Amino acid sequence: MRRRAILAADMPTPTVMRDGLAVYVIGTGEPVLLMPGPHRFQRPGLRTADALIAGLTGLGRAVVTFDPPGSGASTRPARLGMAEMRGCADEALAAAGAPERVDALGHSMGGLALLDYALDRPARIRRMVLIGTGSGGYRHAPGALWNRTHPHFARLAMLGSLHLLVPRLATERILNNLIERESYCDKALAHPAPVSATDWLCAPRGRADWHRIARKLEFGPRLAELDAAVLILCGRHDPQFPPSCSNQLATGIRRSELIFFERSGHYPFIEEGAFWSAVGTFLARTTG
Image 1 (tube, rainbow, N blue to C red):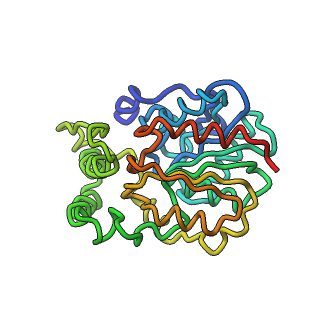
Image 2 (spheres, rainbow, N blue to C red):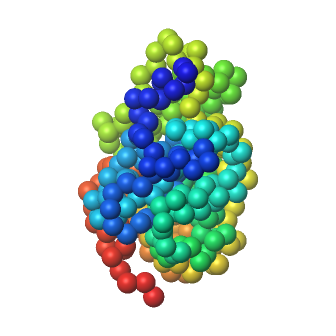
């Protein structure tokens, strides 16, 4: 009951519940799959997911997405892995009555999950947009917040260790607030979450253990298998998946286009107005 009360303010009503999986179909028009992040921090009702949903519906698309098991309105127990995300995406598309081939978009860890989905189910993806993501190995990219090349790595490592030792909503928010601030080029756009005394008594919302899975993923050797048209978008100052990650994607994917946003960090769809113009132009093209 405590968890439900905490989430009630930012948890919209699912379009359909499918065996405990909360599925959303938002807007009207041709469906587009929005792959959420497996770590449970990018679902309807949360800022970054809502910004992506608003942008896609503004382009005249119906957004199909879901709450990963163990998060949001989904009551299904979490298994935490790529097979789980692939299966949930299939279920969401089926519940939405989507055609066999769809356009898709993924940001950050959601982009990594979408890349896995496209490699495993190539017949399902017509075009895809990958934002601030990579093919794996992001922890070792030059300038990444996750390694010693970043000036705030020591603080991140300390807060990450604290969260592992004391897995509470408070430690999760303190850690995520650091990541939030570092992820915007314009720091005024960052929205750190307030931390209250009761947060020390509440369970975390995300799955920190997801990163133990993510660090083992490496799709670089398989990028040439992709035949779908791919638009790769990245903020020039992204500290989570630095530009080298997007460069690797563009080098490996044959039918790809790479655009950098010079005044953005990890969230170019919030920081720069030109972002949605680029996405709209790409999705309006006739596929070959």
